[in-house]
Image 1: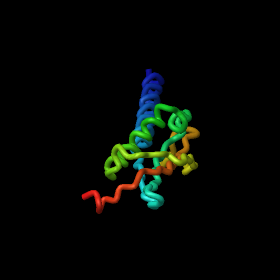
Image 2 (image 1 turned 180 degrees about the vertical axis):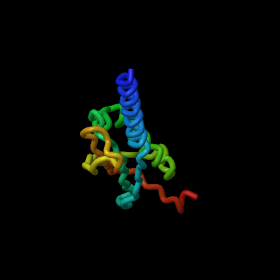
Image 3 (image 1 turned 60 degrees about the vertical axis):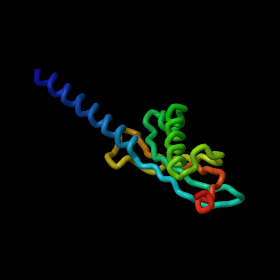
Image 4 (image 1 turned 90 degrees about the vertical axis):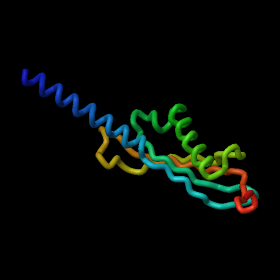
Length: 126
């Protein structure tokens, strides 16, 4: 009986730890940084940090769509909603291990997108 209770407790804490690591990975902040204005376009760098949990966070279409949705929300907040937008580059760079150690071979990556948006002069628009 004691062995069963111990096994259940260990399983419970493993599941709890896995869930907490996943929720931390989803809540990692994004960064949206203006780079330059050139030839009528505003350039931005968008960064999202992800884990390699079963590699699905890095390369799956589902997670890529979620990152693009976050990028679109940043553009909208920056008053570039419905603007001409082009992703010029996407780089995935190793950023270390999760703060809480992660599970097994978990690693953090920063995914950087360089984005080109038709420039709107906010001074003239108002």
